[in-house]
Amino acid sequence: MKFSRLFASSLLIPFALNPLSLAVAQESQDSPTNLIVVTGTYGPKTVGESLSSVTVLDEEEIRTKAPAEFSDLLRSQPGINVTGNGSFGKSTSVNIRGVKNAGTVFLLDGVKVHSATAGGAPWQFIPTELVQRVEVVRGPRSSLYGADAMGGVVQAFTLDPKYGQRGWVEAGAGNFNTQKVSAGVSGSTGNTRYSLSGLHKDTDGTAVIENGDDQGFRNTAGLGRVVHDFDNGGEASILVLQSEGNTEYEGGNTDFTVRTIGLGMTVPLNAYWQTGIQFSESRDESDSFEDWGDSTHNTRLRQARWENTFSYSGHDLIVGTELQQDEVSSTEQYSETSRTNTAAFSQLRLSFGPADAHLSLRTDDNEAYGTKETGGVALGYSIDGSHRVRASYGTAFRAPTFNDLYWPLAFNYQGNPNLKPEESENYELGASGNYNRWFWDLAVYQMDIENLIGSGQIGGVDTRVNVNEARIRGTELSGGYASGGWRTAIALAYMNPEDRETGNQLRRLTRQTARVDLDKAFGGFTLGGSVIAEGHRYDDAANNDRLPGFATIDLRAGWYFAPNWSSRLTVANVLDKEYSTAKVWDGRNYIAAGRNAMLSVRYDIH
Image 1: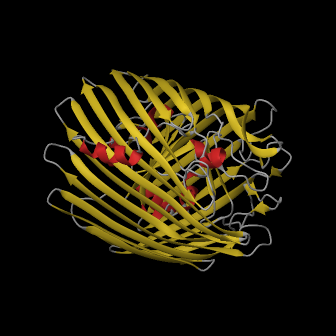
Image 2: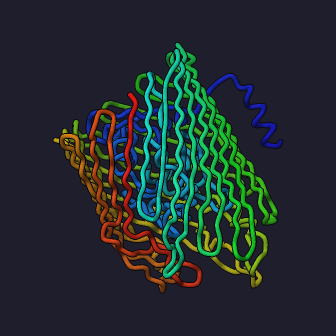
Image 3: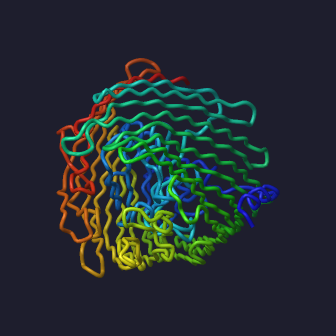
């Protein structure tokens, strides 16, 4: 049966929702380990109760740092490697715990966003200015989210509609001839809340390769959300986000569009049973104009999901089903242009006073590569009111992309339709401390990956093959302090991403990362800075092409100079450090932007 018929017929199901798409994570006034998160499990739990390694970036942190790009928020957070082909809207990869970009799931208010051809999310086109909160869950989550959640999950929550009227207007300018303006408004009528916001930014950019020309970036984005609260405690919502523009690079430029639509509703049937359904569609479209010819790559992901939560005496059972289809439309003649995945999933969350247990199981049936079962078990124990320990085991897999499977023969390269998914087993031990003004979290883990997809030859033609195995071991330590206007966060990570066949370090992954963020608020002023350091990495699997490590310093200042008025100055890479996290095919370095300053003024309407 065609997915379009299944998708349409599923609208007749008289139930509703995936709580991930609609639940708004509310913050506790306590330590970050007590924040409510919804990405680590099916439904809201505190960071500690989620039995996961979780990093939360809240609205205050996002607004204070005012990053130029979404990936700057994630850079050198525990277990995260970010690589890119230059700055300002250039191709970006986010790798969690050594797993490739295609093994990191990105959710926007519960809606999965990715490229079916390249794999992974279009991180460079996600407008940070329209994001209110980010949750990062490290470790396998395929038993919850299916294919590709091998390394972890990043979920961004957009601006939440509030009751009452409010809004803002902000404008800024910086070097590289950069300008941006954003505005938003939210309000309510009766039980219905709404928000509308938009952004436009334009920059001449900077060189992306050594001795290259400046490469610009233009982005226009809009977001709309409507939420209706029912008297029985249920709600219905709609989300629409579109981000479009143009990005330039060596040898060409690309017109891009990222569009996400989500519809959902929750209904509490009684005191013990909540049911819901979600329908969503995300598109990643590009038209490229290059020296060697023009091309189009459009992908569309459609999902329908039915989820039920049964609760009794502190225990929860979640069961549901999901239907998903990827579609590709391209100037490249792929031998297959769609694939359908059906899944059934469940999670049991048990709470026995200081002890918690989570068990999850999921089956995915994909017409391209068959059936995969994944599962997970996590145990946690609260030693006292401040200390908790946890242990977990989980399996996961990463699906081959359309480029891996079906890329047509060109320049002696062709996809391999016989590829198997990558599969992993994961073990983790963790401990955390949660105190009045500070917290810490420590995790050690091991991930064993089979059927690693790499480069090879079949019949003299370059292609993708399942050849290698990998073992990734790591340690992550994070902590923070908040008191008297001070806000400090520290993230340290060591990882050994090893190719088991050669003993080499996996391509483009660094072993050491460190990040320190420090901010101070006093009177009407805020001052702060970040130090980010990363060790060396290799651009090739043979470990012959070494990219040196680097450290950068960012500074920032804010001033609330009048009622409802504020200004902010950010200076990224203050020391103008030239560094690279990837190379061009011809051996030249992709280089990140040097010193980058932005001054903005904002007016808030309360």
